[in-house]
Image 1: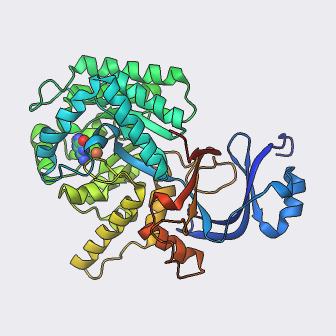
Image 2: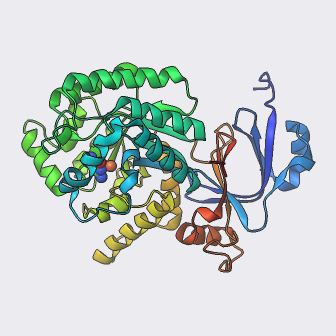
Length: 449
Ligand code: GUN
Ligand code: FE
């Protein structure tokens, strides 16, 4: 360890830091110092009172420390484990139908327009900017079936400095919008081209993810081929599972030789320790055991689950099965692109379960905070790199100012206790309270358009 050349410190921040660890859903560090090195990694943490010693050990000038104001604190960046970039244009509308009708009526006709790269540029730059402003430092995106537009999203995430997983959607079945699908061969070939071209760009924070839309959009051959592609290139995988009861019923009918919906993905090599599956509202305990055994994770998308009347995910049961779990906005099935909304809807869902069963162990705000940060990083297999303030990880963080002028909480901070102020921010705050956003040490918000 002592042989390693000392990192060069680029920035040091002093103030309150709040984050989650494996042991505790909320750790509050008051008057803490955090140093970020020139690679954007957290080089050290320590008590404010030890400023002099730390400045000598790590070689920085104490007068250049950035001191947070009284109403400010740092939290880790928010991780959106499931968002459809190509559905952003109609977010906030079209929520009057259940999933399968919703896909046919609203989603497929819009997604089919991403052959137009000007349209793609407009929608994708807006979604990256909006999510960054809302504090999403990492986003796991679905695009459309179009490779070039998908590569463009990768470029935009890189340009704006967002950490992103980008998945070109694969589908060789579409009985309703017939022109919006690929042949099985095209889907494989374009997936390989997408992976190769995105990796060739060497964007430091952007990775491809193999993306079968869901079992109802993919023939068995395609599922198997995509599983093989992911295995060959050791890539992450994302899809949807057990979101809605009609979907579950159709999957049973179409895949009769499989034991369950989970088994369809499992047998096609699509359930790995790098897989994230959205929803899972209707998974059985046996299926959750398979998630635990394979190391696959779930993305809880509470706004979408309620907006499309899909179901209520029992997060307590998922956690009991020790399945990795993050939160997702699922734009545009979910109408909000803000992870703060996902936090609120996750809590609401847990409370609805408590209304139905007063003995239910409601999620605390600290637990939901963990799901939105460290949980999301774990679900995306990024927790070696992000998710909390641990020395050696990248500095992905939000500088929160609860007293932002014109913001929703300017006169309403009624406590000196950081944990209570965090609760208030999670419930009432918005992007006006997110003064700065950092990804890998770089300030990416505010940005100039
Ligand atoms: N299942 C398959 N495709 C989709 C989609 O685009 N959104 C949601 N919420 N569920 C899906
Ligand atoms: Fe989705």
